[in-house]
Image: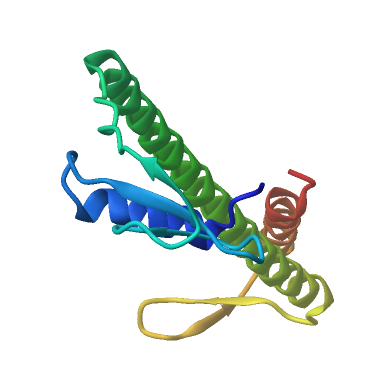
Length: 150
């Protein structure tokens, strides 16, 4: 006969609530239903003497501590992996932004009719052909730096 969870729970509850010397009766009625009680019942009943719970050995306790330490180490490693993935995703987003900015700057530099620089007083000076070529080359280098396939 299979025991249901509720019957096992009831039996366990009775075991816990009574002292080790107490008796528990397993009663079966005419329909075959089984129940656990602390007094004999009419019909068929069987006396069940509870046994004390097994004592956990030091060896088993040590294994449990080792298992807990391993689980904590695994969780710490997993959290570090998640942080590394988040950092990598952030760096990728920043790289995409810088690539976009570099392309925009290169587009403006290469298609501008005039390029200039300003001094400390805010006065503008047109770039020479050499300075313009250098500025365009620097803009291309920035695009290559941020827009490569890394």
